[in-house]
Image (tube, rainbow, N blue to C red; front, side, top):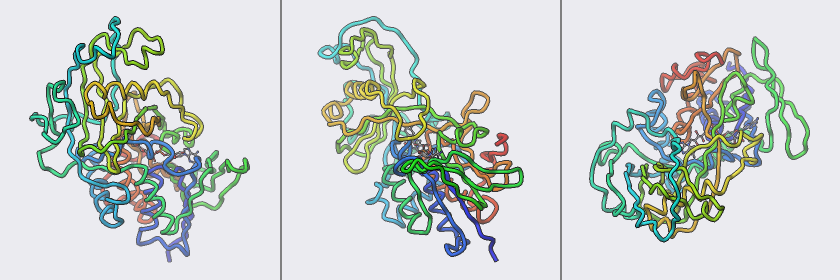
Length: 422
Ligand SMILES: Cc1cc2nc3c(=O)[nH]c(=O)nc-3n(C[C@H](O)[C@H](O)[C@H](O)COP(=O)(O)OP(=O)(O)OC[C@H]3O[C@@H](n4cnc5c(N)ncnc54)[C@H](O)[C@@H]3O)c2cc1C
């Protein structure tokens, strides 16, 4: 006889949702015996980074212990549930351009000012291993939405023709997987912000949460397992996890362009001041080189993201994230210098979200996946730039930890939270 499991998942981003999904699909899950409840603080699932990310998937992503499993599961989920139509799963070409934008190109737009070179902080999407996969080549003919005149170099990611980069629309993926998890027997409660984990040295007992619709504190008792998957808020729910957040802005264009994900390195004239900044009275602009990313996306979109910032600390909930419109307009102004197609495209969203990071000794140490020192208390968080890519793998492994007592599909002992004193 299987022992009854009463499981609470904290957080309805991609990690919480895929965890709920794979728990309901696990051969040992018996809906008549086990209970899976997901508590999400925001009014809907995918309210944080999981709804606002780019959605790039790459076999060249990191960490290596998790990526191959998760990349394969994305393909399997798409095949099983019609992911191509439902959440835009598709293969995509990926590469990197070097561009030089001259003063002449900008002469109608810019006013001259002095250079003041603040370094551009980069979302760390490519690690050294991934950079090594870039192959120098001609700019592909079908990458016709980038201005050839400004491009000085193009390098393709991976071997030409290799099937090592794909994408999903992260909002549609996360909400679809959440729906499938509920169809499989998981209970999702939104507007339910977990305020306390009730644990002892010997195990977990329950959780308290604020019902944001009634302002009441509610309690769920007799738990056997709590999985904290609260993304950048994980450090708030479980401080010893040390998972924190870093804000990043992004922009979604309404435009139908050929399927490429393009990393950039754009050299701007030293006196470049975007028009919106000039209108704000800003005479200097601090960027000489910028490297925003742009991904063509399914459903007639392109997604661009810029540099992260630490200007505003993580708010209480995902629906309270502040968007600084000027940061989005910066991204738009950079892409206008290298793509007339994007310059003319309507912008359908200007948004911001927080990247979940686990920082150890001043360095990002990748996601934490697995058991903590408290029996029955689990963590699945801190996925940095690759949480969409690594969501299904994380969910699958968490379902194995819970029902089999060990991670079976991949060896992720390097991500064990107990190694980091959690
Ligand atoms: C600009 C940007 C672009 C990105 N692009 C990509 C990409 O192309 N490919 C890729 O693989 N990854 C990408 N990522 C990374 C990816 O978005 C994240 O790693 C991933 O979404 C993290 O998922 P999560 O479920 O851990 O966190 P989140 O999506 O933040 O979800 C956490 C959830 O927990 C909820 N929560 C918080 N506190 C509580 C509480 N107390 N009680 C209940 N619920 C709570 C929140 O409301 C939230 O919904 C990108 C990230 C950013 C910022």
